[in-house]
Length: 202
Image (tube, rainbow, N blue to C red; front, side):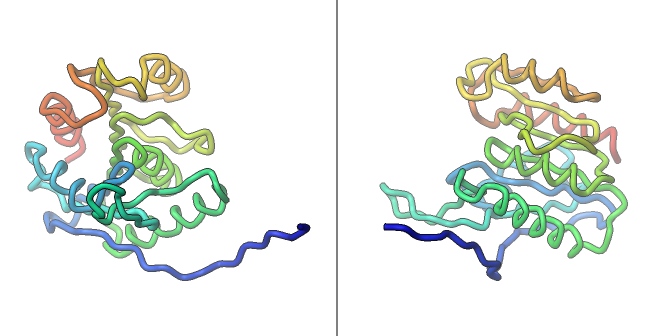
C-alpha cells in the first residue's frame, strides 16, 4: 500500500520538580531512560552542598509503563523522527530555564540518556557555567558552546566504555573526568566529584 508520512506540531505538557534554594544558582538535571524526575531528584539531593543550589529535575516528554511493574517512567526520544524530537526537547528545556527568571549561574546535568539532553541544553543555552554528565557520550548533533564539563564513568560500565570516553575527550575542550569503581550508576565517589565541581562555580 502506498502512503505518505506527514508530521504536525502538537502541544504536550512537561513536568519538572523544583527543590528551592538560592535563586541565583540553578542546577537543571535530566534523568536516564525508564526513570522519572522523582528518582533523579533523589540522586541530586544526595550531593554534598546541594542546599546552595536551586535544583530542577526535568521529566522527559514521553511516558510509558514498565512491563513488569506498570510503573510510569519516561524516555527522551527514540530514533523515530529524531530531529523533530530533539527540537521539541530543546524548546521544552528552554521554557523550563526561562521559568526561573534568568539566574546568574546555570549548570546542566544528565545521567545516561539524560546526559545527551544535558549536552544539548548546555549547547543551546550558550551561557551555562558548567555541565555534569554521568555515563553518557556527546550526541552527534552537538558541535559547539560546551562549557566546562565533569564526566563520570564507572570502570565496569559496559555501555559508556573507555573508548567512548576517549572519543569525547578529543572533542571537548575543557573536561574533568571522574572514573570510579562502579558501573552504569550513581556512586558516592562521583557525587563528591560533583560537589567539588559545583563548589568552584559558586
